[in-house]
Amino acid sequence: MQRTNDLRPSPGGKAPLPRRNFLRAATAIGFAGPAVLAPAGAAQQQGAMSGSATASRRLQAVDEINNKARQALDPICRGCKQCDGVACAGEYPGLGGIGSGLSFQNNFQALKRLQLKLRTLTNVATVEKKPDTSATIFGRKLSFPAIAAPVGGLANVGNRMAPDKYFDAIIGGCVDAGTAGAIGDEPTAPDALKIRYDVIARYEGGAFACIKPRPNPNYLSVLPMAEASGAFMVGIDVDSAARYAGARAETQVGTKTPAQLRELIRASKRPLVVKGIMTPEEALAAVEVGAPGIVVSNHGGRVLDHTPGTAEVLPAIADAVKGKTVIFVDGCVHYGVDVLKYLALGADAVLVGRHLVKAAFGGGREGVALYMRTMRDELEAAMVMTGVPSVDKVSRRILV
Image 1 (cartoon, rainbow, N blue to C red):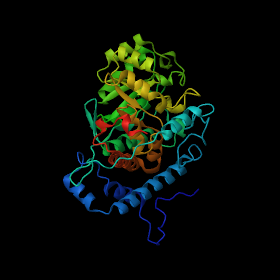
Image 2: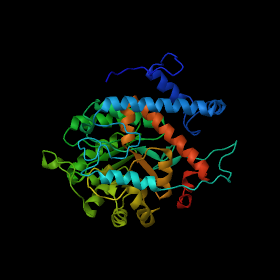
Image 3: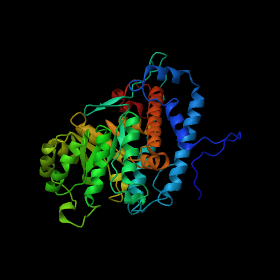
Image 4: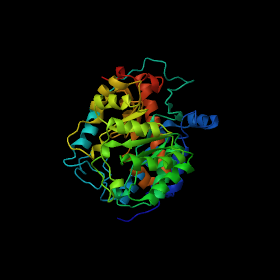
């Protein structure tokens, strides 16, 4: 397939706009981010523009990013309109779900089944104000409660982008959008891991640094690098316990006992979140050993076949530990309405995975920023239409 750096001509026959300039324009026009992050003049300019024109340009730019990503990742990712795990079922390495692919598909279907109550006889959106999408997580203010999900081995996407460029796109784009990026671990390549932490440092710690469940002594040897980078939170993805085995014993990974988790949590100078919680019992166990945060996650459906979707298990977990720890969740987050649904089920924030991978490959840093800003704007619109004035007021009452 031939690639081009220009957008296709419009139906009206106008000359194509260079891709980079188009993305910059689409990012700037109507996407300066929420008022807390953009100057007042930018907000006024946005208000003066035609909403339909802005939406049209946004959709055109997002479509272009998806087209570029499809070319760059073919055949690893088919660029499906709905990323539901069907076409890529069983493809690992790759972006698919393990085995039959049902765990990935369950994430998608569980979220899709949720319906929202449309409520407009409210005062949450007026000429003077709009809903407040901002959130503060571990002291870091975010334009909306969504950050990148950690990605580890780029072999899953065929090593088609240099690690420094990929993580610069993810972290830089998220920071540009007023939120935070993330990195995953690379136990067998210390030099490659250092590159990732160097990128975090360039963006003043605007990222989540997740470390594989290595043996505790090895985990503790990597932790200072994460802390020195300024990462605003660190983690351990215990949901990858059976997914990675290094050549050396000290880099192999495995499950953790509560006592082992307690040791890591106490040693960390940053809030340490435990990723891979799928039951209320394990959520309570994490809280009991002092976990500042948990991530409700089945690793994108890539570690165990036939698990329920995260939206199915989140309510019971939130009932058990809400207010005792920060609750993150991942699983097919694509639109702003997906963020709203997960917040309604009890999450404090969400992690965005595959769609940011595609944004990075299709548009680099600018593409990631555009995706995140689009998602924030969609969340704001969904809050207007469900009568929610701020993200801390989202509750299950908005669900049918």
